[in-house]
Length: 426
Image 1 (cartoon, helix red, strand yellow):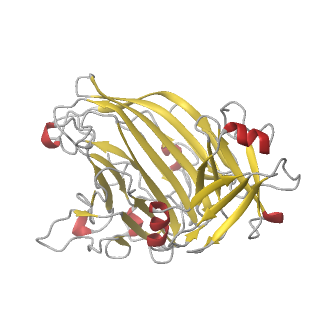
Image 2 (image 1 turned 180 degrees about the vertical axis):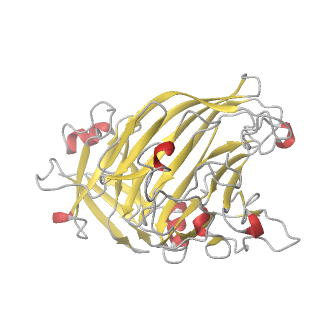
Image 3 (image 1 turned 45 degrees about the vertical axis):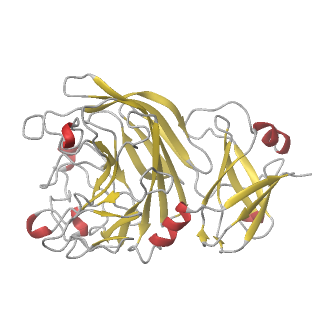
């Protein structure tokens, strides 16, 4: 008798959700022999588990690719189409793979000396830099329009705020170590660093790619004050719906202050927020905040969107000193841009202590006359129950086509907050 997975939507709709269910290795091995072996490492090395969608045409012949993590016992797959509120779907684990079946968005992750690079369906998606800066960061993160939805270094405003990443301490708030402003000298420096110690796991597969690595946080003098294990997972639901899930596990932290852990990114100047593009949130707080009001608010999600540039610019093909001398090289510019709209959202999660967290403490339109590079933040603090660790928090990054309404950011966030439930039966 085949092993059956039953998905229950609950009160919310789910569009191509990433489904996760715990399944014992013995169950996987019995249902699909040879797919629950030892953990693998490499760009495209995770074994596929094939599912048959008995209630909807999930793909060619109703085939849905799943990916099994033998280290945690988690089976993950993207359910094609919509799982409507109040409905169920049943999928059976197949004993072998049909020869013609291929995954829709396989993920390849390769490591270089200073970064891990994720490609989805053969297309470049994101580069995760782990050395060379004060903290790891993602840049570029390529949206559906072909350009990055986060800004790299080199812009006139805050050139040291690079990509999408996790910072700490703010401007030494409450006496905390500063791993935020990147200044070497006062008034905001000297600062600390998040030091990459090595990858625990780098895996690609038919559903998602993942990097897991160890970090030591050091203060101004190079003394360790925290240890972290970070997992970054890349997956797509479609060409226009791209995701990065990040989990931060703090093993221990001993700092003189109780500084914030800040998920932060800068939007490209081409989005020209607020004059052309827009920054929105589920709290309904206008961005930038009206004069005389606080820029801080609590929100379960924050989104920024705008034009991608004209034309959409791909990642650099060579070193800057070569590119600037090439005919047709991109000139320096500070918005507004043209071209297709795209955006990026950050989703907080109800399991995080203190949910919903403070968003937008430093957010708003930056640059001359409030134009240019909008900043999005989501601030966490060590929980009162475990101020020195251990504690864990997670967030989801949603890279999408169009604005927050076009891409159904609110519905995507609700699906993340309350995912479908799964039961396993034989």
